[in-house]
Length: 575
Ligand code: ATP
Ligand code: MG
Image (tube, rainbow, N blue to C red):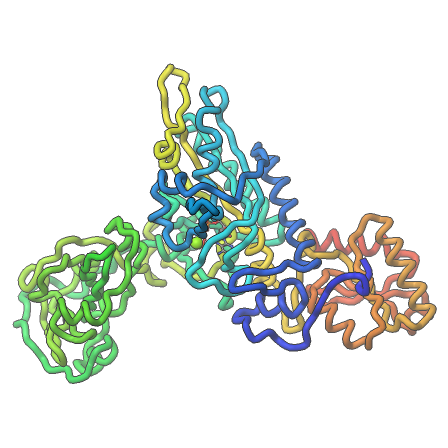
Protein backbone atom coordinates (compact mmCIF):
# COMPACT_ATOMS: atom_id res chain seq x y z
CA UNK A 1 0.00 0.00 0.00
CA UNK A 2 1.17 3.51 -0.77
CA UNK A 3 0.85 6.08 1.97
CA UNK A 4 -0.60 8.64 -0.45
CA UNK A 5 -3.41 6.22 -1.26
CA UNK A 6 -4.15 5.23 2.33
CA UNK A 7 -6.20 7.14 4.88
CA UNK A 8 -3.73 7.69 7.75
CA UNK A 9 -4.65 11.00 9.39
CA UNK A 10 -1.81 11.37 11.90
CA UNK A 11 -1.88 14.27 14.35
CA UNK A 12 0.96 16.41 15.69
CA UNK A 13 -0.72 17.04 19.02
CA UNK A 14 -2.07 14.68 21.65
CA UNK A 15 -5.86 14.51 21.62
CA UNK A 16 -7.24 16.15 24.75
CA UNK A 17 -9.94 13.56 25.33
CA UNK A 18 -7.46 10.70 25.83
CA UNK A 19 -6.37 9.87 29.38
CA UNK A 20 -4.09 6.89 28.78
CA UNK A 21 -1.12 6.45 26.50
CA UNK A 22 -2.57 3.77 24.20
CA UNK A 23 -5.68 5.84 23.57
CA UNK A 24 -3.57 8.92 22.80
CA UNK A 25 -1.35 6.97 20.44
CA UNK A 26 -4.18 5.26 18.53
CA UNK A 27 -5.82 8.63 17.90
CA UNK A 28 -2.58 10.45 17.06
CA UNK A 29 -1.36 7.70 14.76
CA UNK A 30 -4.62 7.79 12.79
CA UNK A 31 -5.97 4.37 13.84
CA UNK A 32 -9.23 5.43 15.46
CA UNK A 33 -11.65 8.36 15.54
CA UNK A 34 -14.41 8.93 18.04
CA UNK A 35 -18.00 9.20 16.86
CA UNK A 36 -19.70 9.47 20.26
CA UNK A 37 -18.86 8.53 23.87
CA UNK A 38 -17.50 4.97 23.71
CA UNK A 39 -18.18 4.64 19.97
CA UNK A 40 -15.30 4.63 17.49
CA UNK A 41 -14.48 4.46 13.79
CA UNK A 42 -11.71 2.01 12.99
CA UNK A 43 -9.55 3.50 10.22
CA UNK A 44 -7.58 1.44 7.64
CA UNK A 45 -4.55 0.76 9.87
CA UNK A 46 -6.78 -0.26 12.78
CA UNK A 47 -8.96 -2.45 10.63
CA UNK A 48 -5.85 -4.32 9.45
CA UNK A 49 -4.86 -4.95 13.08
CA UNK A 50 -8.37 -6.11 13.99
CA UNK A 51 -8.50 -8.46 11.01
CA UNK A 52 -5.17 -9.96 12.02
CA UNK A 53 -6.25 -10.54 15.61
CA UNK A 54 -9.57 -11.96 14.36
CA UNK A 55 -7.72 -14.32 12.06
CA UNK A 56 -5.53 -15.61 14.88
CA UNK A 57 -8.64 -16.03 17.05
CA UNK A 58 -10.44 -17.94 14.28
CA UNK A 59 -7.51 -20.23 13.64
CA UNK A 60 -7.11 -21.11 17.31
CA UNK A 61 -10.84 -21.55 17.89
CA UNK A 62 -11.21 -23.77 14.85
CA UNK A 63 -8.17 -25.76 15.94
CA UNK A 64 -9.85 -26.29 19.33
CA UNK A 65 -12.89 -27.73 17.56
CA UNK A 66 -15.22 -24.73 17.83
CA UNK A 67 -17.43 -23.81 14.88
CA UNK A 68 -18.01 -20.29 13.66
CA UNK A 69 -21.56 -18.98 13.36
CA UNK A 70 -23.10 -15.52 13.32
CA UNK A 71 -26.00 -14.67 15.60
CA UNK A 72 -28.24 -11.60 15.45
CA UNK A 73 -27.25 -8.43 17.27
CA UNK A 74 -30.93 -7.57 17.63
CA UNK A 75 -32.54 -9.68 20.32
CA UNK A 76 -36.07 -9.88 21.76
CA UNK A 77 -36.34 -8.66 25.36
CA UNK A 78 -38.29 -11.79 26.38
CA UNK A 79 -35.13 -13.89 26.23
CA UNK A 80 -33.43 -11.62 28.70
CA UNK A 81 -36.48 -11.53 30.92
CA UNK A 82 -36.57 -15.33 30.94
CA UNK A 83 -32.97 -15.55 32.15
CA UNK A 84 -33.61 -12.71 34.62
CA UNK A 85 -30.73 -10.70 33.13
CA UNK A 86 -33.15 -7.97 32.04
CA UNK A 87 -32.91 -7.01 35.75
CA UNK A 88 -29.43 -8.17 36.76
CA UNK A 89 -27.54 -6.61 33.83
CA UNK A 90 -29.91 -3.68 34.18
CA UNK A 91 -28.76 -0.37 32.77
CA UNK A 92 -25.76 -1.86 30.96
CA UNK A 93 -28.17 -3.62 28.57
CA UNK A 94 -28.54 -1.52 25.43
CA UNK A 95 -32.33 -1.44 25.12
CA UNK A 96 -34.56 -0.10 22.38
CA UNK A 97 -38.16 -0.30 21.17
CA UNK A 98 -39.39 -1.18 17.71
CA UNK A 99 -42.29 0.56 15.92
CA UNK A 100 -44.76 -1.69 17.74
CA UNK A 101 -43.22 -0.55 21.03
CA UNK A 102 -41.83 -4.01 21.69
CA UNK A 103 -38.68 -4.07 23.78
CA UNK A 104 -35.48 -5.16 22.06
CA UNK A 105 -31.89 -5.53 23.16
CA UNK A 106 -28.69 -4.90 21.20
CA UNK A 107 -26.60 -7.91 22.22
CA UNK A 108 -23.74 -7.38 24.65
CA UNK A 109 -23.28 -11.14 24.95
CA UNK A 110 -25.22 -14.11 23.58
CA UNK A 111 -25.84 -16.78 26.23
CA UNK A 112 -29.61 -16.44 25.85
CA UNK A 113 -29.60 -16.43 22.05
CA UNK A 114 -27.26 -19.41 21.70
CA UNK A 115 -29.19 -21.44 24.27
CA UNK A 116 -32.42 -20.62 22.43
CA UNK A 117 -30.71 -21.66 19.19
CA UNK A 118 -29.69 -25.14 20.34
CA UNK A 119 -32.79 -25.79 22.45
CA UNK A 120 -34.79 -28.53 20.84
CA UNK A 121 -32.08 -29.10 18.22
CA UNK A 122 -29.65 -30.86 20.50
CA UNK A 123 -31.66 -33.87 21.57
CA UNK A 124 -29.10 -36.50 22.37
CA UNK A 125 -25.79 -36.83 24.22
CA UNK A 126 -24.46 -38.09 20.88
CA UNK A 127 -24.57 -34.52 19.55
CA UNK A 128 -22.30 -33.34 22.38
CA UNK A 129 -19.89 -31.75 23.09
CA UNK A 130 -20.52 -28.73 20.91
CA UNK A 131 -18.81 -25.35 20.80
CA UNK A 132 -20.18 -22.45 18.73
CA UNK A 133 -18.51 -19.07 18.37
CA UNK A 134 -18.82 -15.80 16.53
CA UNK A 135 -16.94 -12.55 16.04
CA UNK A 136 -19.27 -9.60 16.20
CA UNK A 137 -19.86 -6.07 17.40
CA UNK A 138 -21.22 -6.00 20.93
CA UNK A 139 -23.16 -3.26 22.65
CA UNK A 140 -23.02 -2.36 26.32
CA UNK A 141 -24.24 0.84 27.90
CA UNK A 142 -21.18 1.11 30.14
CA UNK A 143 -21.66 3.46 33.08
CA UNK A 144 -18.29 5.06 32.32
CA UNK A 145 -17.07 4.48 28.77
CA UNK A 146 -13.42 5.51 28.76
CA UNK A 147 -9.88 4.84 27.60
CA UNK A 148 -10.84 4.56 23.91
CA UNK A 149 -11.35 0.97 22.86
CA UNK A 150 -10.63 -0.36 26.36
CA UNK A 151 -14.11 0.34 27.66
CA UNK A 152 -16.38 1.33 24.86
CA UNK A 153 -20.10 0.98 24.25
CA UNK A 154 -19.75 -0.73 20.89
CA UNK A 155 -16.80 -3.10 20.51
CA UNK A 156 -15.66 -6.18 18.67
CA UNK A 157 -15.75 -9.44 20.59
CA UNK A 158 -15.26 -13.11 19.95
CA UNK A 159 -17.76 -15.04 22.01
CA UNK A 160 -17.90 -18.83 22.21
CA UNK A 161 -20.36 -21.15 23.95
CA UNK A 162 -19.78 -24.78 24.87
CA UNK A 163 -22.40 -27.46 25.55
CA UNK A 164 -21.59 -30.69 27.35
CA UNK A 165 -23.44 -33.69 28.69
CA UNK A 166 -21.59 -34.01 31.99
CA UNK A 167 -19.03 -32.37 34.26
CA UNK A 168 -16.06 -34.49 33.11
CA UNK A 169 -16.71 -33.65 29.51
CA UNK A 170 -17.21 -29.97 30.42
CA UNK A 171 -13.83 -29.88 32.17
CA UNK A 172 -12.18 -31.00 28.95
CA UNK A 173 -14.09 -28.41 26.91
CA UNK A 174 -13.12 -25.67 29.38
CA UNK A 175 -9.47 -26.69 29.35
CA UNK A 176 -9.45 -26.62 25.55
CA UNK A 177 -10.63 -23.01 25.61
CA UNK A 178 -8.05 -22.04 28.21
CA UNK A 179 -5.30 -23.57 26.10
CA UNK A 180 -6.70 -21.83 23.02
CA UNK A 181 -6.71 -18.49 24.87
CA UNK A 182 -3.07 -18.78 25.94
CA UNK A 183 -2.32 -19.66 22.30
CA UNK A 184 -4.30 -16.71 20.91
CA UNK A 185 -2.66 -14.10 23.09
CA UNK A 186 0.81 -15.58 22.69
CA UNK A 187 0.38 -15.46 18.92
CA UNK A 188 -0.69 -11.81 19.24
CA UNK A 189 2.65 -11.18 20.97
CA UNK A 190 1.07 -10.81 24.40
CA UNK A 191 1.93 -12.69 27.56
CA UNK A 192 -1.15 -13.20 29.69
CA UNK A 193 -1.78 -14.26 33.25
CA UNK A 194 -4.90 -16.29 33.98
CA UNK A 195 -6.63 -15.21 37.18
CA UNK A 196 -9.69 -16.35 39.11
CA UNK A 197 -12.48 -13.83 38.77
CA UNK A 198 -15.94 -13.01 40.00
CA UNK A 199 -18.77 -14.33 37.84
CA UNK A 200 -20.76 -11.09 38.11
CA UNK A 201 -24.07 -10.83 36.26
CA UNK A 202 -22.99 -13.72 34.03
CA UNK A 203 -23.64 -16.08 36.94
CA UNK A 204 -22.52 -19.68 37.00
CA UNK A 205 -19.97 -21.42 39.16
CA UNK A 206 -16.56 -19.96 38.50
CA UNK A 207 -14.71 -17.80 36.03
CA UNK A 208 -11.24 -16.88 34.88
CA UNK A 209 -9.82 -13.81 33.24
CA UNK A 210 -6.81 -13.40 30.98
CA UNK A 211 -4.78 -10.37 31.91
CA UNK A 212 -2.10 -8.47 30.07
CA UNK A 213 0.10 -7.08 32.82
CA UNK A 214 0.92 -3.41 32.36
CA UNK A 215 2.25 -0.95 34.82
CA UNK A 216 0.41 2.01 33.42
CA UNK A 217 -2.88 3.76 34.15
CA UNK A 218 -4.47 1.66 31.43
CA UNK A 219 -4.45 -1.38 33.74
CA UNK A 220 -8.02 -1.16 35.06
CA UNK A 221 -7.76 -4.38 37.08
CA UNK A 222 -5.70 -5.09 40.15
CA UNK A 223 -4.62 -8.68 40.42
CA UNK A 224 -3.04 -10.63 43.27
CA UNK A 225 -0.66 -13.48 42.64
CA UNK A 226 1.80 -15.74 44.41
CA UNK A 227 5.29 -16.48 43.09
CA UNK A 228 5.53 -19.75 45.00
CA UNK A 229 2.39 -21.38 43.56
CA UNK A 230 0.01 -20.66 40.69
CA UNK A 231 -2.50 -18.68 42.74
CA UNK A 232 -3.69 -15.59 40.85
CA UNK A 233 -6.95 -13.73 41.28
CA UNK A 234 -8.64 -10.47 40.42
CA UNK A 235 -8.92 -8.15 43.45
CA UNK A 236 -12.70 -8.68 43.29
CA UNK A 237 -12.13 -12.33 44.12
CA UNK A 238 -8.73 -12.50 45.85
CA UNK A 239 -8.56 -13.73 49.43
CA UNK A 240 -5.67 -13.99 51.86
CA UNK A 241 -4.74 -15.66 55.10
CA UNK A 242 -5.80 -13.58 58.08
CA UNK A 243 -2.89 -12.14 60.03
CA UNK A 244 -2.49 -13.27 63.61
CA UNK A 245 -4.55 -11.50 66.27
CA UNK A 246 -3.25 -8.04 67.07
CA UNK A 247 -3.11 -8.76 70.75
CA UNK A 248 -3.92 -11.57 73.08
CA UNK A 249 -7.49 -11.82 74.22
CA UNK A 250 -7.60 -10.71 77.82
CA UNK A 251 -9.42 -8.25 79.94
CA UNK A 252 -11.07 -5.49 77.94
CA UNK A 253 -10.76 -1.87 78.82
CA UNK A 254 -13.71 0.28 79.72
CA UNK A 255 -15.84 1.60 76.84
CA UNK A 256 -15.51 5.38 76.64
CA UNK A 257 -16.99 8.19 74.57
CA UNK A 258 -14.37 10.70 73.46
CA UNK A 259 -14.88 14.06 71.75
CA UNK A 260 -13.37 14.10 68.26
CA UNK A 261 -14.36 17.55 66.98
CA UNK A 262 -14.72 17.73 63.17
CA UNK A 263 -12.74 14.47 62.85
CA UNK A 264 -14.43 12.25 60.30
CA UNK A 265 -11.86 10.34 58.30
CA UNK A 266 -9.85 7.37 59.57
CA UNK A 267 -6.66 9.44 59.28
CA UNK A 268 -8.10 12.36 61.24
CA UNK A 269 -9.53 10.24 64.03
CA UNK A 270 -6.58 7.86 64.46
CA UNK A 271 -4.13 10.75 64.15
CA UNK A 272 -5.99 12.65 66.86
CA UNK A 273 -6.24 9.61 69.16
CA UNK A 274 -2.68 8.58 68.31
CA UNK A 275 -3.51 4.99 67.40
CA UNK A 276 -2.80 3.09 64.17
CA UNK A 277 -5.60 2.82 61.58
CA UNK A 278 -5.70 -0.91 62.28
CA UNK A 279 -7.14 -0.09 65.75
CA UNK A 280 -10.23 1.50 64.27
CA UNK A 281 -13.32 -0.15 62.83
CA UNK A 282 -15.02 1.71 59.99
CA UNK A 283 -18.82 1.46 59.82
CA UNK A 284 -20.03 2.08 56.28
CA UNK A 285 -23.70 2.25 55.43
CA UNK A 286 -24.84 0.74 52.14
CA UNK A 287 -28.14 0.45 50.35
CA UNK A 288 -28.65 -2.95 48.76
CA UNK A 289 -31.70 -3.08 46.48
CA UNK A 290 -33.36 -0.41 48.63
CA UNK A 291 -32.46 -1.90 52.03
CA UNK A 292 -29.88 -0.21 54.25
CA UNK A 293 -27.16 -2.19 56.05
CA UNK A 294 -23.90 -1.47 57.83
CA UNK A 295 -20.60 -3.03 56.75
CA UNK A 296 -17.79 -3.06 59.32
CA UNK A 297 -14.14 -3.33 58.48
CA UNK A 298 -10.70 -2.58 59.94
CA UNK A 299 -9.66 1.05 59.41
CA UNK A 300 -6.75 0.33 57.09
CA UNK A 301 -8.71 -2.07 54.86
CA UNK A 302 -10.98 -1.51 51.90
CA UNK A 303 -14.48 -2.93 51.51
CA UNK A 304 -14.77 -5.30 48.56
CA UNK A 305 -18.14 -4.40 47.12
CA UNK A 306 -18.19 -7.42 44.82
CA UNK A 307 -17.85 -9.79 47.77
CA UNK A 308 -20.47 -7.84 49.71
CA UNK A 309 -22.86 -7.87 46.77
CA UNK A 310 -22.45 -11.63 46.35
CA UNK A 311 -23.05 -12.28 50.05
CA UNK A 312 -26.19 -10.15 50.00
CA UNK A 313 -27.26 -11.58 46.62
CA UNK A 314 -28.09 -8.01 45.67
CA UNK A 315 -28.38 -6.50 42.21
CA UNK A 316 -27.75 -2.88 43.10
CA UNK A 317 -25.38 -2.01 45.91
CA UNK A 318 -24.34 1.53 46.63
CA UNK A 319 -23.15 3.58 49.56
CA UNK A 320 -26.05 5.10 51.47
CA UNK A 321 -26.62 8.79 50.86
CA UNK A 322 -25.91 11.33 53.67
CA UNK A 323 -29.61 11.73 54.48
CA UNK A 324 -30.03 8.01 55.07
CA UNK A 325 -26.86 7.95 57.19
CA UNK A 326 -28.22 10.83 59.29
CA UNK A 327 -31.59 9.11 59.67
CA UNK A 328 -30.12 5.77 60.76
CA UNK A 329 -27.19 6.89 62.91
CA UNK A 330 -28.50 10.25 64.11
CA UNK A 331 -25.19 11.78 63.05
CA UNK A 332 -23.39 13.16 59.99
CA UNK A 333 -21.35 10.90 57.76
CA UNK A 334 -18.11 10.10 59.61
CA UNK A 335 -19.50 9.19 63.03
CA UNK A 336 -21.30 5.89 62.39
CA UNK A 337 -20.59 3.00 64.73
CA UNK A 338 -22.07 -0.38 65.64
CA UNK A 339 -22.78 0.24 69.32
CA UNK A 340 -26.48 0.91 69.77
CA UNK A 341 -27.10 1.07 66.02
CA UNK A 342 -30.69 0.02 65.38
CA UNK A 343 -32.72 -0.95 62.34
CA UNK A 344 -29.95 -2.21 60.09
CA UNK A 345 -28.13 -5.51 59.70
CA UNK A 346 -24.48 -5.42 60.78
CA UNK A 347 -22.14 -7.31 58.47
CA UNK A 348 -18.62 -7.55 59.81
CA UNK A 349 -15.42 -8.55 58.11
CA UNK A 350 -13.83 -11.72 59.48
CA UNK A 351 -10.81 -9.78 60.63
CA UNK A 352 -12.91 -8.07 63.29
CA UNK A 353 -12.89 -11.33 65.25
CA UNK A 354 -9.17 -10.73 65.87
CA UNK A 355 -9.61 -7.22 67.23
CA UNK A 356 -10.12 -5.93 70.76
CA UNK A 357 -10.42 -2.46 72.30
CA UNK A 358 -10.95 -0.69 69.02
CA UNK A 359 -12.24 2.74 68.00
CA UNK A 360 -15.61 3.30 66.29
CA UNK A 361 -17.94 6.19 65.62
CA UNK A 362 -20.38 7.01 68.45
CA UNK A 363 -23.45 7.72 66.25
CA UNK A 364 -23.24 11.29 67.53
CA UNK A 365 -21.68 14.30 65.80
CA UNK A 366 -18.10 14.96 66.92
CA UNK A 367 -17.77 11.84 69.08
CA UNK A 368 -16.07 8.45 68.80
CA UNK A 369 -15.97 5.47 71.13
CA UNK A 370 -12.75 3.84 72.30
CA UNK A 371 -12.21 0.37 73.78
CA UNK A 372 -15.10 -1.09 71.82
CA UNK A 373 -15.32 -4.88 71.90
CA UNK A 374 -17.36 -7.39 69.97
CA UNK A 375 -19.94 -9.36 71.97
CA UNK A 376 -19.56 -7.18 75.03
CA UNK A 377 -20.65 -3.97 73.24
CA UNK A 378 -22.44 -5.16 70.10
CA UNK A 379 -23.24 -8.23 68.03
CA UNK A 380 -22.69 -8.81 64.33
CA UNK A 381 -25.50 -10.31 62.26
CA UNK A 382 -23.11 -11.80 59.78
CA UNK A 383 -19.34 -12.39 59.73
CA UNK A 384 -17.82 -12.79 56.27
CA UNK A 385 -14.80 -11.95 54.17
CA UNK A 386 -15.86 -8.55 52.80
CA UNK A 387 -12.49 -6.90 52.29
CA UNK A 388 -9.84 -6.60 49.63
CA UNK A 389 -6.73 -8.68 50.10
CA UNK A 390 -3.59 -6.61 50.76
CA UNK A 391 -0.18 -7.06 49.18
CA UNK A 392 2.21 -8.81 51.55
CA UNK A 393 -0.45 -11.04 53.11
CA UNK A 394 -0.03 -14.80 52.96
CA UNK A 395 -1.16 -16.68 49.86
CA UNK A 396 -4.47 -18.46 50.53
CA UNK A 397 -3.44 -21.44 48.41
CA UNK A 398 0.09 -22.44 49.46
CA UNK A 399 0.25 -20.46 52.74
CA UNK A 400 3.96 -19.99 52.06
CA UNK A 401 4.65 -16.86 50.10
CA UNK A 402 3.36 -13.31 50.33
CA UNK A 403 0.83 -12.02 47.81
CA UNK A 404 2.00 -9.53 45.21
CA UNK A 405 -0.09 -7.20 43.08
CA UNK A 406 0.03 -5.97 39.52
CA UNK A 407 -2.17 -3.97 37.20
CA UNK A 408 -3.76 -5.79 34.31
CA UNK A 409 -5.95 -5.34 31.26
CA UNK A 410 -8.56 -8.07 30.95
CA UNK A 411 -8.49 -9.23 27.34
CA UNK A 412 -10.39 -12.50 27.73
CA UNK A 413 -12.80 -14.16 30.10
CA UNK A 414 -14.03 -17.73 30.54
CA UNK A 415 -17.11 -18.73 32.54
CA UNK A 416 -18.26 -22.06 33.93
CA UNK A 417 -21.97 -21.44 33.53
CA UNK A 418 -23.24 -24.80 34.73
CA UNK A 419 -26.94 -25.13 33.93
CA UNK A 420 -27.95 -21.52 34.66
CA UNK A 421 -29.04 -20.71 31.09
CA UNK A 422 -30.14 -24.18 29.98
CA UNK A 423 -32.40 -24.37 33.03
CA UNK A 424 -33.84 -20.88 32.49
CA UNK A 425 -34.53 -21.60 28.81
CA UNK A 426 -35.30 -25.27 29.30
CA UNK A 427 -32.56 -26.59 27.00
CA UNK A 428 -32.36 -30.31 27.68
CA UNK A 429 -31.02 -33.47 26.03
CA UNK A 430 -31.46 -37.19 26.57
CA UNK A 431 -28.38 -38.72 28.20
CA UNK A 432 -26.86 -42.18 27.73
CA UNK A 433 -29.01 -43.49 30.58
CA UNK A 434 -32.20 -42.29 28.88
CA UNK A 435 -32.67 -39.43 31.37
CA UNK A 436 -33.58 -35.92 30.31
CA UNK A 437 -30.92 -33.48 31.58
CA UNK A 438 -30.00 -29.81 31.27
CA UNK A 439 -27.05 -28.93 29.05
CA UNK A 440 -23.88 -27.95 30.89
CA UNK A 441 -22.55 -24.71 29.45
CA UNK A 442 -19.47 -22.54 29.33
CA UNK A 443 -18.97 -19.15 27.71
CA UNK A 444 -15.74 -17.60 26.52
CA UNK A 445 -15.04 -14.03 25.40
CA UNK A 446 -12.11 -12.26 23.80
CA UNK A 447 -12.25 -8.52 23.36
CA UNK A 448 -10.73 -8.08 19.91
CA UNK A 449 -10.67 -4.28 20.02
CA UNK A 450 -9.48 -4.25 23.64
CA UNK A 451 -6.71 -6.73 22.82
CA UNK A 452 -5.50 -4.42 20.04
CA UNK A 453 -5.32 -1.47 22.40
CA UNK A 454 -3.78 -3.60 25.17
CA UNK A 455 -0.92 -4.35 22.78
CA UNK A 456 -0.34 -0.60 22.40
CA UNK A 457 -0.54 -0.01 26.15
CA UNK A 458 2.02 -2.78 26.59
CA UNK A 459 4.35 -1.91 23.68
CA UNK A 460 5.14 1.73 22.97
CA UNK A 461 7.82 4.35 23.60
CA UNK A 462 7.91 8.12 23.63
CA UNK A 463 7.85 8.20 19.81
CA UNK A 464 4.86 5.97 19.29
CA UNK A 465 3.45 2.48 18.96
CA UNK A 466 5.63 -0.64 18.68
CA UNK A 467 3.36 -3.31 17.17
CA UNK A 468 4.18 -6.96 17.79
CA UNK A 469 4.94 -8.46 14.35
CA UNK A 470 1.91 -10.81 14.12
CA UNK A 471 -0.69 -8.06 14.57
CA UNK A 472 1.11 -5.07 13.01
CA UNK A 473 -0.94 -3.37 10.27
CA UNK A 474 2.04 -3.77 7.92
CA UNK A 475 5.24 -5.74 8.44
CA UNK A 476 7.57 -3.37 6.61
CA UNK A 477 7.63 0.31 5.84
CA UNK A 478 9.68 1.51 2.89
CA UNK A 479 10.83 5.08 3.47
CA UNK A 480 12.57 6.97 0.71
CA UNK A 481 14.09 10.04 2.35
CA UNK A 482 13.36 12.15 -0.70
CA UNK A 483 10.75 10.82 -3.10
CA UNK A 484 11.58 13.59 -5.62
CA UNK A 485 15.02 12.08 -6.10
CA UNK A 486 14.76 9.83 -9.14
CA UNK A 487 17.27 7.24 -7.89
CA UNK A 488 15.64 6.95 -4.46
CA UNK A 489 12.23 6.77 -6.03
CA UNK A 490 13.27 4.00 -8.36
CA UNK A 491 14.93 2.00 -5.59
CA UNK A 492 11.93 2.48 -3.29
CA UNK A 493 9.48 1.16 -5.87
CA UNK A 494 11.77 -1.71 -6.80
CA UNK A 495 11.98 -2.82 -3.16
CA UNK A 496 8.32 -2.16 -2.49
CA UNK A 497 7.21 -4.24 -5.48
CA UNK A 498 9.69 -6.99 -4.69
CA UNK A 499 8.47 -7.32 -1.11
CA UNK A 500 4.85 -7.29 -2.27
CA UNK A 501 5.60 -10.04 -4.78
CA UNK A 502 6.99 -11.98 -1.86
CA UNK A 503 3.56 -11.64 -0.14
CA UNK A 504 4.86 -9.28 2.50
CA UNK A 505 2.63 -6.48 3.74
CA UNK A 506 4.44 -3.28 2.86
CA UNK A 507 3.62 0.37 3.31
CA UNK A 508 5.52 2.72 1.04
CA UNK A 509 5.79 6.26 2.36
CA UNK A 510 5.65 7.92 -1.05
CA UNK A 511 4.66 11.30 0.36
CA UNK A 512 6.49 14.37 -0.76
CA UNK A 513 7.19 15.40 2.83
CA UNK A 514 10.24 16.39 4.83
CA UNK A 515 12.25 13.39 5.97
CA UNK A 516 11.63 14.38 9.59
CA UNK A 517 7.87 14.22 9.18
CA UNK A 518 8.11 10.80 7.57
CA UNK A 519 10.43 9.44 10.25
CA UNK A 520 8.19 10.74 13.03
CA UNK A 521 5.03 9.39 11.45
CA UNK A 522 6.76 6.07 10.83
CA UNK A 523 7.73 5.75 14.48
CA UNK A 524 4.24 6.84 15.53
CA UNK A 525 2.36 4.17 13.57
CA UNK A 526 4.82 1.54 14.76
CA UNK A 527 5.49 -0.78 11.81
CA UNK A 528 8.07 -3.38 13.00
CA UNK A 529 10.62 -2.85 10.20
CA UNK A 530 11.69 0.26 8.31
CA UNK A 531 13.72 0.21 5.10
CA UNK A 532 15.27 3.63 4.74
CA UNK A 533 16.39 4.63 1.28
CA UNK A 534 18.81 7.57 1.40
CA UNK A 535 21.16 9.21 -1.03
CA UNK A 536 24.46 8.29 0.61
CA UNK A 537 23.81 4.58 1.21
CA UNK A 538 22.25 4.17 -2.19
CA UNK A 539 25.51 5.27 -3.80
CA UNK A 540 27.10 2.21 -2.13
CA UNK A 541 24.11 0.11 -3.23
CA UNK A 542 23.01 -0.22 0.40
CA UNK A 543 19.67 0.15 2.18
CA UNK A 544 19.28 0.85 5.89
CA UNK A 545 17.11 -1.63 7.78
CA UNK A 546 15.82 -0.44 11.16
CA UNK A 547 13.79 -2.34 13.73
CA UNK A 548 11.12 -0.34 15.55
CA UNK A 549 11.34 -2.29 18.81
CA UNK A 550 14.99 -1.61 19.59
CA UNK A 551 16.08 0.92 16.96
CA UNK A 552 18.76 -1.44 15.69
CA UNK A 553 20.10 -0.50 12.30
CA UNK A 554 21.90 -2.64 9.75
CA UNK A 555 23.04 -1.87 6.24
CA UNK A 556 21.85 -4.37 3.69
CA UNK A 557 22.90 -4.86 0.07
CA UNK A 558 20.20 -3.67 -2.27
CA UNK A 559 20.03 -7.12 -3.85
CA UNK A 560 19.62 -8.88 -0.49
CA UNK A 561 16.78 -6.86 1.00
CA UNK A 562 14.19 -9.61 0.52
CA UNK A 563 16.11 -12.31 2.38
CA UNK A 564 17.24 -9.95 5.10
CA UNK A 565 13.71 -8.65 5.78
CA UNK A 566 12.31 -12.17 6.01
CA UNK A 567 15.13 -13.16 8.37
CA UNK A 568 14.71 -10.19 10.72
CA UNK A 569 10.92 -10.50 10.78
CA UNK A 570 11.18 -14.14 11.71
CA UNK A 571 13.58 -13.26 14.51
CA UNK A 572 11.30 -10.49 15.83
CA UNK A 573 8.27 -12.75 15.64
CA UNK A 574 9.97 -15.28 17.91
CA UNK A 575 10.71 -12.70 20.61
P1 ATP B 1 -15.07 -5.93 32.34
O1 ATP B 1 -14.91 -6.56 33.69
O2 ATP B 1 -13.81 -5.27 31.84
O3 ATP B 1 -16.28 -5.04 32.24
P2 ATP B 1 -16.56 -8.14 31.41
O4 ATP B 1 -16.35 -9.13 32.47
O5 ATP B 1 -17.81 -7.35 31.39
O6 ATP B 1 -15.32 -7.14 31.33
P3 ATP B 1 -17.02 -10.11 29.36
O7 ATP B 1 -18.48 -9.99 29.44
O8 ATP B 1 -16.39 -11.33 29.85
O9 ATP B 1 -16.32 -8.83 29.99
O10 ATP B 1 -16.54 -9.84 27.85
C1 ATP B 1 -15.48 -10.55 27.23
C2 ATP B 1 -14.37 -9.62 26.82
O11 ATP B 1 -14.87 -8.52 26.08
C3 ATP B 1 -13.63 -9.00 27.96
O12 ATP B 1 -12.65 -9.87 28.46
C4 ATP B 1 -13.02 -7.77 27.31
O13 ATP B 1 -11.83 -8.12 26.63
C5 ATP B 1 -14.07 -7.38 26.32
N1 ATP B 1 -14.91 -6.27 26.81
C6 ATP B 1 -15.86 -6.31 27.76
N2 ATP B 1 -16.43 -5.12 27.92
C7 ATP B 1 -15.83 -4.28 27.03
C8 ATP B 1 -15.99 -2.90 26.70
N3 ATP B 1 -16.88 -2.14 27.32
N4 ATP B 1 -15.19 -2.38 25.74
C9 ATP B 1 -14.29 -3.14 25.10
N5 ATP B 1 -14.10 -4.43 25.37
C10 ATP B 1 -14.85 -5.01 26.32
MG1 MG C 1 -18.23 -5.43 32.02
